[in-house]
Amino acid sequence: GAVVSQHPSWVICKSGTSVKIECRSLDFQATTMFWYRQFPKQSLMLMATSNEGSKATYEQGVEKDKFLINHASLTLSTLTVTSAHPEDSSFYICSAQENRDGNSPLHFGNGTRLTVT
Amino acid sequence: GDSVTQMEGPVTLSEEAFLTINCTYTATGYPSLFWYVQYPGEGLQLLLKATKADDKGSNKGFEATYRKETTSFHLEKGSVQVSDSAVYFCALRPYGNNRLAFGKGNQVVVIP
Image (cartoon, rainbow over all chains, first blue to last red; front, side, top):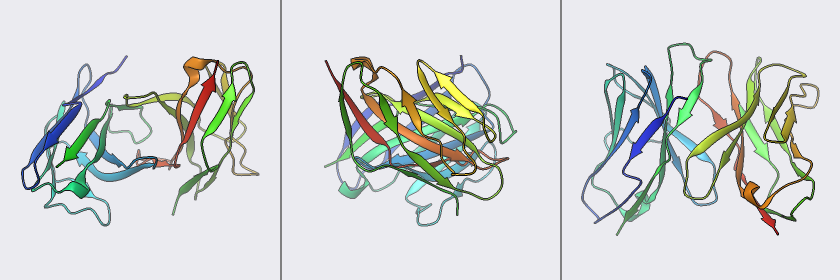
């Protein structure tokens, strides 16, 4: 089946530094990827929709200059948390859509646990 | 906007007990409905889905029926196992796009 690989699975960084998270579709081409944030004991909140070759669409309240998204190829999207602060500590999850049909299957990565000290 | 509401609080039950997790939704049009499961330390996995009214999704002994009249998609399993311990999320997908709306999730703990 379709696999989405997310890397790293966990990362600890110091306040003020930037962290990059990668999301790769391993055996299919993903024209669209989604980035979610999950707070402890909370639901997943959609942060942005990433389309290959174009700018990401951010949800209301999500700072695009802080959460930089790049979707340079059909198999890779990256989320960079810039100038991280402790309040950015969270579980970040990506998902990938197999084709341009909005009803096509979604596949999720295993998530990245970010801790900012 | 579209939203999903799950029953409050964790669920703790004994092995072989009957499990029900309630899910109701608010949406325009004809959304698809999903249950996702998240095992400790892992990402989300699709458990089952239903794409139209009266459809029943089923997988691994779990079932859920898309009830348009009550806007519900309750998850059930007749006899749970310890390995079913996980967080379960109900989700809605509007027709034509993959911007999923998730419920808050329910932690299920099955005790031997």
